Amino acid sequence: MLRYLLAMLLLTFLTLNATVPYHPDPDWISSDSNQYSTGCIWSDINQDTYPDLVIANGNDMARQRLVVYYNSPQGLSQSIGWMSDDIDYHGHLDTGDVNGDGFPDIVVSVYIGETGFNSKGKVKLYLNNQGTLSSSPDWISEDRFYTFSCKLVDINLDAKPDLAVATGESYYNQPDSNRVYLNTGTIFENLPSWKSNRADCSYDVNFADFDHNGYPDLVFVNSLQSNQVYFNYNGILETQASWNSSDTLCNANSLSLGDINNDSYIDLAVSDNNQMAQSGHFKIYQNNQGQLGDSPVWVSDYNDYGSGIELFSYAENGFDHLIAGGWWTPLHFYQNDNGIFSFLSDWVSNTESVVERIALSDANLDGIHHQMYEFAGQSGIQFYNLPHKHLNAIDSVYYGGSKLNLNHYAGFLENGSLSVSFSPADDSLFQIYYQWSDKKDIAVSNWGNYPNMVFYWQNQPDSNDDTLQPLADFRFKAYPNPFKISEKKQINIEINSKKDSNYKLSIFNVKGQKITHFEEKRIGSGISQVSYTLNTNELASGIYFLKMESSNESQLKKILILK
Image 1 (cartoon, rainbow, N blue to C red):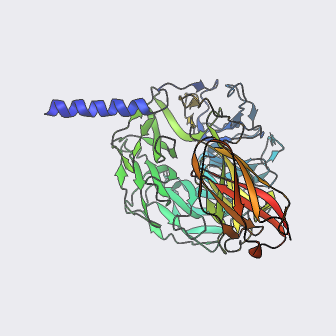
Image 2: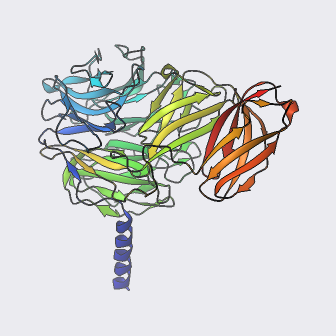
């Protein structure tokens, strides 16, 4: 019986392992090593559509530089394309458009000061001037503290990314208050506007709207104390955390956010690392309809130096899977089977490196989808989660049929979220055009004498995919346009469909309000003409939008109606 169970377990492992779309060996290795690489993120620094790899070096071992490996149609360069002039003991970093010019800037934590652990660190900002990064910081925090991680987030919903900072240091028991620096328009305020009441040794920070109230909350994971969430109410962040994990003596050093059960509520994954005990698990805290559970619903069988963790989805079943690393261990991949994880990893890499950070994006653009996400606005709600995260780009945002300027919204690609600077009208129409991929590549920053690595998605792109053009099941046009109500009662639609499908047609005004809709029609593949009879009494002269929907996507066309 035991032999049978072992055989079935092995068969299950091999079956699952075969479906994991990554080779056990890295497909790209940086030419440099011994840089003590820590922070790691994909970001299209020069806006050529290809995400570049940004690395912060240093940790607590040596003062090093920030570097960028540029990406192109020829692939990711193994050599450094940009480096900072200044050196520091860097921690984690983040990128985003701080000054609103459309180019991603870099923020980075400086773990400890110039003289080591007996001096405190800081946070820095490097601005991006039309694709060229500043070689030295454009802003440095005025106060000093130990910090290993920071994150850009629009706390007060003014469409200007603010800077959240995780502070404290556990080796010498130096807790501190976590911080938020508000954006002044081009840089950050010198001193923080927000500090937590409790002093912690926090090693990572991120944000999500955990309770679905329309405001981004901050989560900090800690060493020696419980993990915490500070909730955001009407743009004001509480100073005393409302959520604390029940495992009060945590040893967390990294976190990731995602949706493990497809219920639209954000769950929390944490990597633990107890250096004294040489132990650390990967854990998941599940969000139950806005209430984050205080104890983990899943804990990995892995029990070693945990470090680096990411939740992400791909096309197999839509659920968020988990990849995590550690010190002197392989990467571990845990597949999500309809909301359930195995305690054992389904795939491990052949590398045994010291993982610091894991980042995901479609580096070679082999699985890019151009998506339009449409929804009705609600008064007072200015923060939105998109259906995907680890985005490659947010191309444009429309409100009420008009394209928003960059100063009216802020996008956060890694989290797949967006904020706007105004309170929308009820039932107003938002359309967000963005790029996402179901073929994400994995970047890993490595501490010590190990190079940085990339594991590329191994499935070949679909033969009919056009990675640089919108993917669409259909095209349609409306005529006559302009439409004169005095002459016509019917509007004609020509639709070119790739397959037989049911289609719905609706009419919206410029405020995004639905005026009317028509019964669903079955339309065959190829080019077809269909007609719809208008109720001319409910239509005044002006601009309208026709929305044609299939089961998979929707498209808009603008028409002019004249009486």
